[in-house]
Length: 67
Image 1 (cartoon, rainbow, N blue to C red):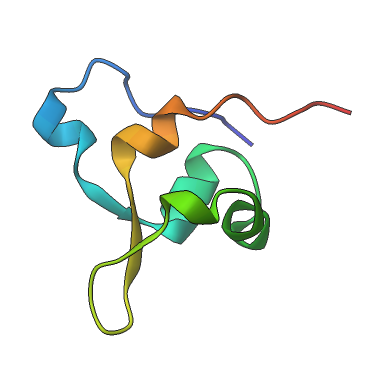
Image 2: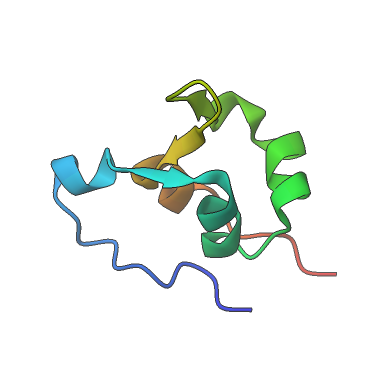
């Protein structure tokens, strides 16, 4: 699985863009439930049912540990 496929040369406005939790997990090459468990402090409720993560926060996370 590719990690960090999105360019890190983003404007501040692009880094504040909201992405789904599933997309944030994909960017970091982890399962969605693992992302929710380990990075719940980054998840924001942006609607009655929608939860999102700022793209910049997802990109700033350290790479996943390798076994």
